[in-house]
Image 1 (tube, helix red, strand yellow):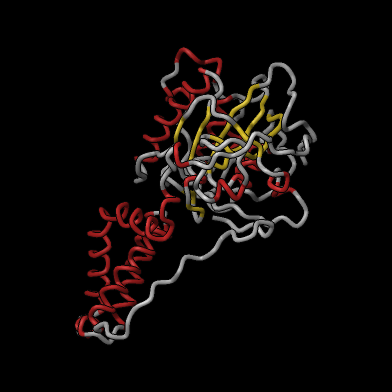
Image 2 (cartoon, one colour; image 1 turned 180 degrees about the vertical axis):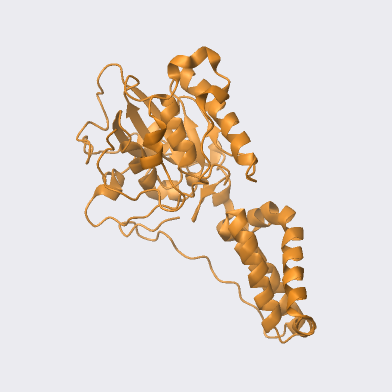
Length: 357
């Protein structure tokens, strides 16, 4: 979860684990080993980097330990240590998901599970009062919108970065951040962060289908984050950071599902797991507070985004299996994506102005 200085009590660290002085050296070694592996696997998130970290961090613990376990390791040549660490990490790989789930449950409790509707906060009838002008595009963010425009809602983690990634695309008329796919009426930021609303941090995208295809927006969506991370994205953990597509038309849903299937094949070939993106029709969208709207473009903002793009491109539209929907084919050329498309690392770099073809 990111910290916002305007919100009291946000981003509190979990209470540290403590141990008694009566524990044996062997127990200390075993617990340190297990916790280190779990932390690296859980917080590393990206499997390729976390495996490397596990191998070398486990070796460091063993090599510096004064326990009999450490002594045994010291008695072996360095090559054995490296091989043993590598072998241990390989054997631990099948346990990565369960260890991650257990650790996140321990640290964050029920915030890693969607609240049941009957337990959700009730909310309120009064809608959030916002300034109805986009800070960059100078268009309405709450409407009314010109005739012929379409809307779609996306969630890719922290909505600050998600919004900037979409308002920069040519053909996008307006964007706004908000909360959707939950149960609480007109929620506040604090309520959403509590995990007791069921809502996701999302971005409303208003676009002109004559200038930009929905398939282009889907490409930006898939390539700008890691859609396999479940209830979180990068360093941001919780149900409000899940990956989601929320269509407003039947065509959008069909395109979203087809693109998911195509992208699953592409990332599976690179070793990624199942996509966890939810696709839910016609959700209620609630506008977030004014200070969140176009946050990254405003003076004194903190340039934060924890999205973790894989660097894997969405397959060509011809591979989506939609021969009857050719009119929805992408409009942006590959040269656009080569220049402006999401890249691994920071996804919010560059000016705040909309890109030009």
